[in-house]
Amino acid sequence: MQINFYEEFPTKENLEKLRLIKWKTKIFVTAKSKEGFAVLEKQIKKIKKDTEVAYWPIAPKTYWISPFSKTEDLEKLFSELNKTKCSLLIDLELPLRENRILLIKNIFRLKKNKKIIKDFLERNKSRVTTAEYPFTIPKRVMKWLGLSYEIGYERNIMWYSSMLPRLLNNIIKKKLNKIENKNNYSISLGTIATGVLGNEPILSPEILERDLEFVEKAGFEKVIIFRLGGLNKDYIEGIEKFAK
Image (cartoon, rainbow, N blue to C red):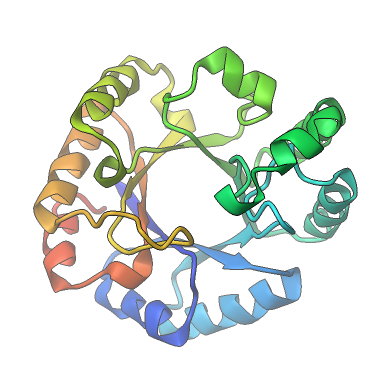
């Protein structure tokens, strides 16, 4: 499998973990602007020059790219992204918990915002990966909320088994097995370090290896592990068994 990584906090210390990786990989890094991303890309290439680097843009207030953002914020963000040529991660999620008031405040922007997001994805589908919830929300609701569009880009299913109870993990596994055209998908695994929420449960190296084994047997060829900063020799030992 192709094994890639997220890095939500691209500090020097976290990026240095690239030195542990012996295979060719792709890193999805957060940045607040295309200029900030360009700086990070140069830093990453100095550490491991064959690394592909993707831009994971952060949206104002909602953090993730959300149809509950302000319309003008989405338009400004996508205008900037249209000026780039790099690979992109469009993280389609509801606003952060402290900004959930936007679900009510911007409900009447939903239809217009969904069209803005959909149009951007259609124009850039050859270089976009979307991060999406792992079947814990019904498909119709996901589409109505503007969290899934299914128009030819690579869809990443965020299956973080450490964050879910066993019952939900088993349901997600069954749905992953039923997916057709698995080449159009990648799977997120983890978490092996905390993220913006600050309380994400950490997956042991043994369970990460078990999840990798499941994903490989299910027929998927790409995974993205959250996140690079949590990588250590114990994780590497298991991951290397599946890396190409």
